[in-house]
Length: 344
Length: 262
Image 1 (cartoon, rainbow over the protein chains, first blue to last red):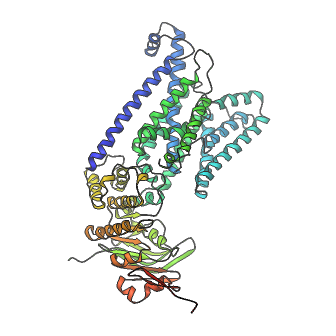
Image 2: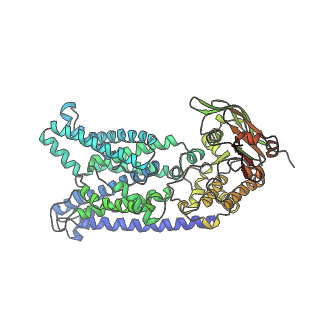
Image 3: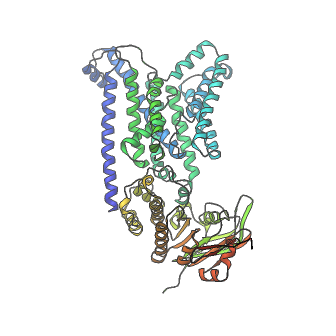
């Protein structure tokens, strides 16, 4: 009897996984096909297998569109599993890397690096950017986690997150005030968020980090289910709660920091995608939810990227604008449907 | 009838948190097949005692032995296999289904990242039959009534398959039917499954009927233990509850006010 219920549950999950995977592949194909330059579909396939007759098209597909799709997938996976872990650890439906100021922390790290570089003489490259962003994220996460023990309720914690955002914004303004125009320019461009600026060599850093983070969250899936039941049940089930907390902090800072370093602060994916997945797939079991959230996150990111390319225009909207325009109403809708926020 | 075994034994135990000592010199033990009810007013330290015995709060002094082995000799997972809890902690965030919650109780028994095996399914099956929660197996925890949820958490403690189950006010917020049902369920679990149960509760009359032993806690007084009859007849039960302004018949639950104006 119990076994059948369990296998039913697994069968539903496999079906959900298959559909999500098909959706992701389909959306990725659409994303590669669409773009300001009209590349014929047969030429896209030819470019992908490496025998295109037109070097420009070959370059568009291989050096621009393919990395962009891979970046969108990586960013989607990273931010959404960050959000999932944080919501479980804080047992708070509104937790997410952006809302609780983790992304702001990463921004601060990058701001100091870009605009303070004149004083501290650190070379500005992808490695130092990633390190600065991760350190900034880690710093904020530790403070937020510490404060979450002091203030137990949702509202206070969110206000703390907002305050972090405000404080970081102020520090960044001060840095801008003293910065030179070039630095300010490059920082501002970075804050818009972009999936297009990531090249193959940067992907070779981004993808392994996302893979490592994803595997670590999979390892944490079973304990995270029990963390959802509360601290007492968790510790009486033989779980080392502190270890889980440190692991979640590490993974989240690493993932959110890296993504923020390469693509700028991208809002709402972290908080919204876990809710979208729970709503669609009707499960809170982390063993099932972690892969589903990763697939949903990458699909959502690709949809946002498709939407950011306005049809018939050469310009591309900043990705952060697109995620916010769709993410903000979604969160408001979720809050209005309060019932669903409490049971996550 | 074979001789009942002592599963948990606390010697010269001092409990409290931080610098605050709540009880000292405790000599208590839990015996298989027995239900012990822990009675006392709010704030007297029932939860602290429970959490200390569960290993969630460190004792200030003394020792706790489980099956003759020091507490500290158990790893987290071994302890979880020996001792389960049902707490008053409100579960606010679990969209988990009953089956998923029960499966999480098998955590200490499962290999790292492995799928559930026959033993896991059997343990869950047994707990589900005992607590009669088959019909809600696929419901989400948040959709359940308080009584149903309490049964699920008791089933989860059973699934964990320890010899000791500690329950903190398992009948709080329940209506009479559910209270009696839960207490009877716990009584049967202790007797049939040979578990040692410690239940903190305010249900004095239910405790008197169903418990093998009572532990009475009072502010600044040593813990009193004995069988329900002894404690009732000796008047110790009345003293614990400081029934100065009213007479309380613990057997019938009848309250008669003392008229002070006379």
